[in-house]
Image 1 (cartoon, rainbow over the protein chains, first blue to last red):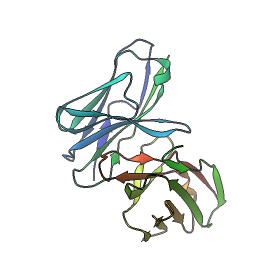
Image 2: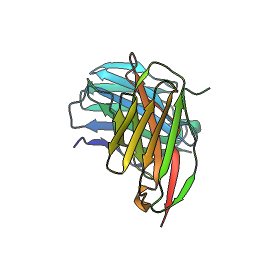
Image 3: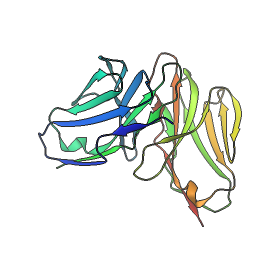
Image 4: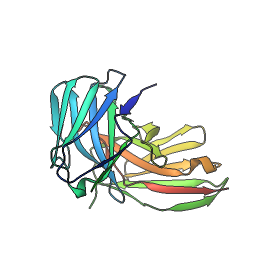
Length: 112
Length: 111
């Protein structure tokens, strides 16, 4: 079974703090993704990575950055957290030759 | 207009009912179609994956794709309370690695 883990299930941060969300996968998948999920808006793509040190912006990259130093690990960074970044953050992985994505359990982030 | 439209519900049905969940899309480049199930406070899990028009069956679940109408459906037979969740349709096309999701339909199956 594919296993995707996220560093925290729940996180509370203050406005202006730097926030790190980490995702780790154990299946050697090339592609990794960060989404945020908000009521009525569904899942929106923030960033994705198709290889180590490679990244591409998704649909809503503003206010976020990412890092992929090792194949199994993909980090999402909020440089200066704001209240409008309160959301559920989901990490996903995908093997190179398919379109099937496997999701982690999510991190519910609250920014006060 | 969103690329993928999905009725948010909530949809409430009695146990044993047949459930029909639907999505429409506007982008002809979408070639691969998925349905994910998401329980409260959990990540989405893949239910069905299909890439051709027609029906695909897996147990109590049937995925239907009509590319000419840009319409996909998920049918759940003999629905159970454990099917209560949010169902997300997702699509992919050539040239874009990421999926495009519908906003999800919340389903409640009453015992």
